[in-house]
Image (tube, rainbow, N blue to C red; front, side, top):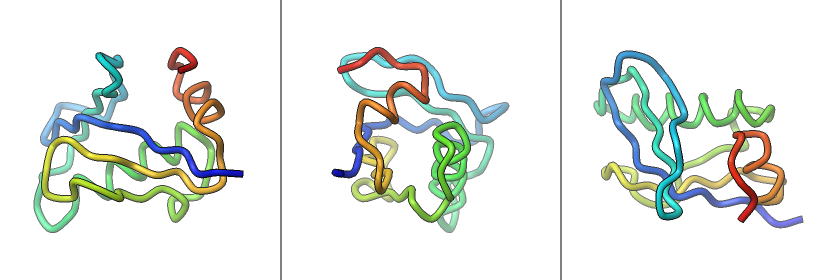
Amino acid sequence: MSDAHLTIRLQPRARRNAIGEEREGVLRVSVAAAPVDGQANAALCKLIAKRVGVARGRVSVVRGERSRQKVVRVDGLAAAEVRSALGLAPG
C-alpha cells in the first residue's frame, strides 16, 4: 500500500486548530502553535493524525518545513482513505 501525500497551506498562530476547505488541490489548515522550533509543524502532524486515526509518528512533513505551503505524508494509508477521513471529496 502506498503512502498518502497532502498539499497543505498552514496558518500558524490561529485561534484554534482546524482543518478547513480545499481550494485548487491545497488543503487549508490552521493551528494555534507558533511557527517557532517546529511547533506549528508538530501541531499540524498531530491534528492530521488525530483526524485520520493513525499514530502521530505515521504523519510527517516531507516538503516545506519552513514554508506555509507543505506536503505531508501519511504512512500506510491510501490517499482515498485519508481524504475520506478528513471529509474531503475523492480525488
